[in-house]
Structures are given as structure tokens and as C-alpha cells.
Length: 134
Image 1 (cartoon, rainbow, N blue to C red):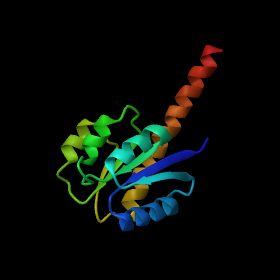
Image 2: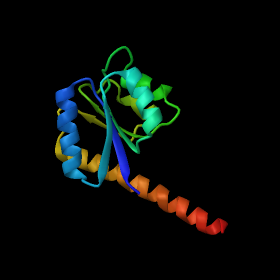
Image 3: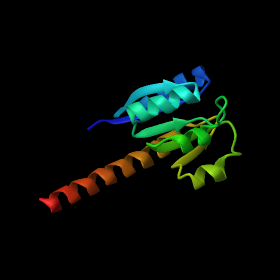
């Protein structure tokens, strides 16, 4: 089972750089979408259902957390923002990690590692539950 991720950032240069770094630190992840507008992002995340979401805070008419709050499907979310003004609100919404730009590849690797560990743990839990029900 492949682990997927999507990016939401209105800075296309940064989104490209972030995608390259994510691929370098975890080549097992599969990139399934990049969005630069919140409305398109909400539709895309709902349709694609990525396992991990890299989310900028200052996008357009909605901030990243307003967008996250609108989603019925909520992937493990790693905020990547130029501002740490949103940290408390992000924690209250269950964001996995909050990285401030400029992001170091090492910090990104730790955040991705944490997300992958949680995903593997959930898969193992589901496997155990399935076996117990048989």
C-alpha cells in the first residue's frame, strides 16, 4: 500500500522545492497533488484523500487552518508556514507538526518520519482488528 501526500502552498517555487525535499527524505511517498488555491485544494483533498498533507497558512481568502476545518476528510497534516502566529490554533485542530519557513530538510525528515510511523501504526491496528474478527 503506497503512502500519498499533497501540498497546498500559493508559492509555486516553494511548493516545487518542498516536493523535491519530501521525495529526497522519503522516496516511498507518492505525490498526488499540489494546490495553490483553497477552493481547488478543498475539492482535491476530498477527492484524492492523501495520507499526508503539507499545508501553508497564508494562501488566499482562507488561511490554511480555515481550509483544514472545512474538510470532511482530514489527512495527517504538517504545516509549513512563514509565520508561527497560527501554532496554537493548529495544535487545537490536531495538526501533526508545525514547521516554520525556511524549513530545514532535517526538520522535514523528522516530521515525515513521525507521520509515517503513525500511518504504519494505524495499518497494524486495522490488521489486528481484521484478524480478530475472523
